Length: 608
Ligand code: G6P
Image (cartoon, rainbow, N blue to C red; front, side, top):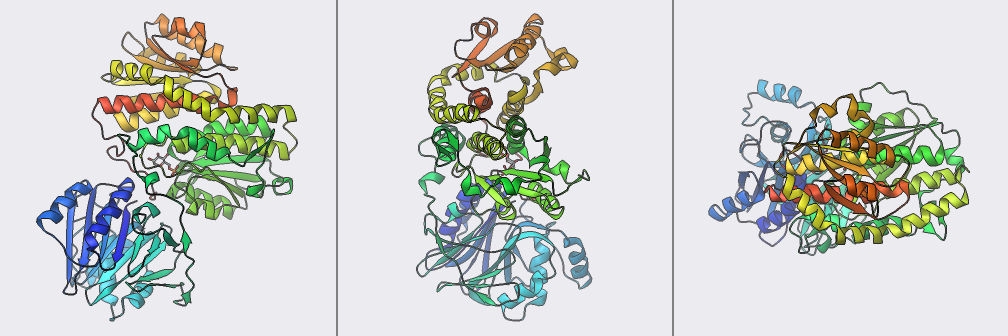
């Protein structure tokens, strides 16, 4: 986790670093810090908590200079406090380092340094690297970093500067993201592109294991053998606007409202007439030959889209499919063989557990497809094919548009694979394609209409301690995702349950003030879920129903009714989750929660 940023040029480095860190706060916000060089030493400023605390610190205690590195932390080794904040400085006070990732062998290295008499200030793995670099420093920071890298195990993106070489920053990455921004007479580095957009659109994605020397004059890249390599500079089409709130109070709300557009983007170019066209993925019947089972691997919200994905893939391909939490899969001694097709789902493409699970299945000879939102991120780079969801940057920690676009991605994938295998009829395909075409406008109408009902509901129940969400089949994962949204941002306990399981335990919780959100759009299991709702009503439970427009039975039963447009059953999770996102959002805002940055969480979990 963590976000890193670096600058070399003629501006005040702290201005650029703070701007960059602001865009990276989604990666962690336990503490923030900068180190700035001005030709006569290194000035380090740190503060615990949000970036604003660091800005306050810099106002009282400015750090002037045109070369600097900055960091926003999500604690992994050591509690979030000032000494554990980055940048870390070597024992001789000359070298400073920022780091995103984990040095797995830090204990061994630390013991070695302790034996040599080095004293440690923090509990972090990063400080070990600072001292190790200082011990090995021979007047050339680039060569020193290259030498020391060989001793590090783990995943990391690091940037280092040294007060004896005040005109350059050395950076490298293994398993954690790092992008270099190319300017005129100034250059940048960061964990992610939005941190650079105010200054440049020209970026270089640093390849795994390579080193970069960033100076005012330019950027030099080296491979693992220290041979110079050509930099591929690309022009990003991301805009700063896309990374801003555009008038919404929170990124999450903006991202919820972006869903109609995001869904159009996911579908764009992938439906043609009455057909699904996945040729961009290079998927062929040949490539799928011999696939006898599918495993979906993901974490968090992506895991729930994977649960819907299982139902979709089984329905349209008839290939047995299972969905795994990547963190469980890794240690479950899974059976892997070349007949296995793996779908790795990830908004960020950087989630460590998913990435590791992917490495395991690849080693076992499985074929791999990514469903991912971030172009060029690690998970797609490790897969044979990728379906990019094209939702645009998602900043709010609670995932919304990434989720619904993943669901649309699974619809495309399931029907597309089904057709390649001749298991989907033309009529069936045309039915889904038509449904997909209508989807963006339906989500738009839902956002326009239902906000009032959802707001009323949020106001009424914001002070309860527990919520139950129930659904069945395609909308069982919707119940889990709805509950997760509420937990994440309002801190109210919520559980997502399969409707049919209520009578096997949770029904005991139901009494007059206990609210259940029942997701019962039209489809095969609607009637069954209505029966489950009746069981709850019979016990005087309160029920908020999410059902299809015009469902009179739902209207009669519900204490609160949230209606979604009529749609194909397979697409209903995409529509049904939208009011649940809003319910969580309005509950959280009424409780005064920090919606975009809920406590203890981070957007991109690059640690195991
Ligand atoms: C974190 C985020 C979640 C996300 C999960 C998986 O927990 O807060 O919103 O669903 O990671 O992330 P990924 O990028 O792999 O989808």
